[in-house]
Amino acid sequence: MTDLTAGPKVRVLRRHVAAAVAGNALEFYDFTTYAFFATQIGEAFFPGKTSFIRLILALITFGVGFVTRPIGAVVFGRLADRAGRKPAMLISLALMGVSIIGLALTPSFKAIGMAAPVLVLAWRLAQGLALGGEVGPTTAFLVESAPPAQRGLYGAWQSVSQNLAAIVGGLVGVIIARAVGPAALADWGWRIAFLLGAVILPFGYFLRRSLPETLHHAEERLAVHPAAATLRSHTRVLAVGVALIAAATVATYVLNYMTTYAIHTLGMPADVALGATMANGVAGCIGGLIGGLLSDRVGRKPLLIWPRIAFLLAIWPAFLLMVRNHDAVTLLSATFAMAFLSALTTAGVLVGLTESLDKSVRGLGMGVVYATAVSVFGGTTQPMIAWLTQATGDPLSPAWYLIAAALVGLVASLFYRESAHAKLKGR
Image (cartoon, rainbow, N blue to C red):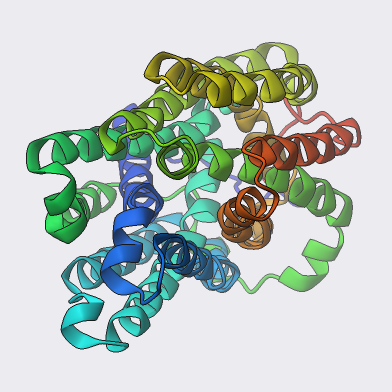
């Protein structure tokens, strides 16, 4: 294989990695905050005779935001592989900023009628486009920036930044819920969470402007690569990647749903339920970093298999305890345990897929696989488990759905080829 990066490598400092991670966290904060306030958004923007119908409409609209993720992955992934990682990350962050401000300022259904859900739908599609274009370039940048023996740790910050967003989102939600009360939270309080993200986004954009480029040399950036043919040569990697990311995605969005689950299914107050978001985020950060470190030491594959087995064994007891006890301690501890075990595998999945792809299609391949899996399974998971719980009357429905997805991920892990100690392709 031709060495596309002959010559001196661009020096990437830790502050550059921090800048990429900060921008990623800001984008995920804005996207996932919708899930945390799905109940209030349903009441504000969607017509319906019951609160359940309004919730389902809000969750379906949340899922629609995943439709444009693959489009964003292709557009920004191609840009990242041709023009560079940096311009792709800057444009995706700017697009997220515009869409989140639009959503936060959209009048309610009572004020403008059907124009409200239509506008919300449009903003969600724009958010999906932006976030679909974020993951591929950012993950490629993190893996390419890393010393060879620390790619797992550096790449782990992709998932850790998402969990940092969940922590901040949950903390903001709890503070707002307790400060303004349930009525004001449903009326206007939830909008504050979105506007805070919009205020911070320009700082993330400023930080990203300082990034060096890891797609080196002008001749490489301007070269036209046969992307379709190269992706076809990665069929096995892409197929295994879709299955692994699908399993991880279902886990992510079931755990992100715990706040809504606690409110609607367990009947817990919003300020307590929002604590599950923080437990999920903290566990994801800790588990993600530990998983990244361990994957650098023992390889990606063991971290794909053994933590997932432990996760499988923990799901049903965790949900059973939550359903039986209906208290804050059980909710937070069960959410923390499941999120920690799930997060141990995440770095292995993201980094393993990224380092298995040739550099000429790394941004595109990673972005498309991630966005496709997330679009199909992330966008449907929350409406599906809400419907299953309502239709069957079984509060353990999310557990069965999560177990099925984890089994798919376990099978896919067996087909993964170890890449931890191999040289990056095209590097």
